[in-house]
Structure formats: C-alpha cells, structure tokens
Image 1 (cartoon, rainbow, N blue to C red):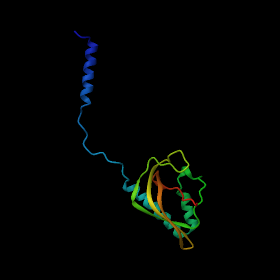
Image 2: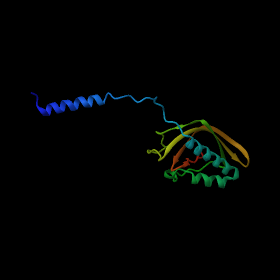
Image 3: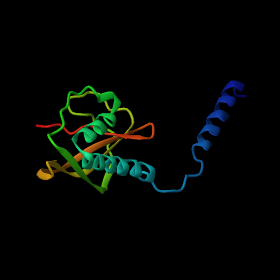
Length: 152
C-alpha cells in the first residue's frame, strides 16, 4: 500500500489541476478608455484657459500658474508673449501612461492624457502665430493640470 503522505499529495495535485480547468469568464478584452468625467475635466481646463486669455495676459498667466502640474511648477518656463487660444480636438483624447515631460525621468503623478490641439498666440487682439500639436493634461485628485506652453 502506498505511503499515506504520497496519497494525500497526489489527491491535492489532482484537485489543484481540476480547479485550473474552471469556467472561462465571458467578455471581450478592450483597451482602457477615457471616461466622461475625465473628458469633462479636460474640456473645462481648455474652456477656463481660453476664458482667462480673453480677459488678458495677466489673468491667463495666473491660471497657467495655478493649473501647472504641482510636481513641475519650478520648470522655469516662460509662456509666449501675448495670450494663447487653444482649440482641442476632443476625438483625439487618449491615455498616454508612458509619457514623461521633456527632460524628466519620472512619470507625472495622476492620469496622463494627450490631445491634439491648435494653439494660437494672440497679441493686442491680432493672431501672430498658430501651431498644431499635442498637449498633455494630467488628472490628479479630481483636477486637470497642464504643462505651460513655453516660448521658443
């Protein structure tokens, strides 16, 4: 007769193997998507930025300072002269979890999103330049933060 310890071990292995053959979970794997709440935070960020720009340079710079990501407030960035108007293309809003700010080694705290934007610099009521590019927004503790556009 077999050793009782071996018999218990064999039964345990059989039970372990049987549990691995359990039912499959139904469903389809899908990539993570931006939620409606996140989309609204990003939309509100750009609305506030453009409204501050319509009020003037000082107001917009104040808002840019308040909404600069808290871990990157000492970046030494000087926004372009005048105000900026940013027109986001919301259909391009997506997660960008591997992004790090230029010159940095660490990922910002929060949920990092990227969106295509048209950025227009306005001085004395006249458009002086326009550029299409990507802008990163980070959602942290229920608030949208950005990275101030830099001159040059």
